Length: 410
Image (tube, rainbow, N blue to C red; front, side, top):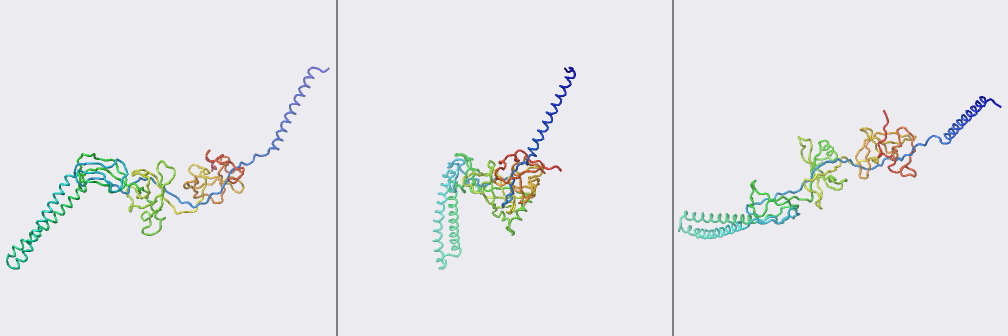
């Protein structure tokens, strides 16, 4: 029988050996699992080459619509307003009756002028007969030369009186016609400024009464200003010659209203001013747009897009594939060794289909990462897959929407 102390030592030795064996087995299992798993694979990304397309750079400006024709309706004769023949704000045609002034005083004046004309013609007939008789009498020495000259003078005065009264009749007829105010242009009329029964002051003086205003709506003009550098660029783009911007040259432009996203309204430049404003350093341009539905209104703000370059062959990328490194734009590319290489680019405008024009920094054969940007790091290995290939990351997975890719440290 063993001594109790010696037995306790034996048990402790057995326990220590078991623990060491278990630890060794654990290390062996870990080593086997590492050998079986290996290094993690390179992350998969979707790559695509830039799209080649003929593009044009555009400049955008804010401006206002102005009417081609605008008229203030004022009376040419004074009198009491008798009637208003339109509804405030309605569309009118050229020649439509708008206002009438009390005609009775002007009718009386016309009748008086006609009576005076009849009297003048009667006097002319008498003096003409007297003058004809005097011609024979003076030849027969029956009357003196002085008497004959008096008859001739009376006849000439009668002729002048007839001409004066004819002019008075025409003026009276014109004043009577002016008692009806008709629309000189087609367009939309504003509200009436004077109600029937009020005295209207007419004529050509500055104190005439304003009755209403009319503006034409179709077509509409759009006026905007641009700086001197842009003006020089447009002049160089235009064909050479004294009429090179002509002034405007009929350049096609597009417009969008403040509540619209796209430039869907097409028009053409028809005028560029002949001098640059010395105070602002800008020059005024004008475009014309059709307005069959009356959507555009004078004074309305809008944005116009003007071609700022000749057509050229450009490279385009999806806008989400472009990141930002402080003030610079950067795209992630994959080289022949499947290594991520960042490239700084100069970007242009965005097309209607969401592609961004790349002006500098990218070649037509570069493979740009368009999906999986969050898994791509500069200098890291990736598994590039062509866009649309089976197994490529789905659109938007790990893209630039979640944040711009990290730029390399300098």
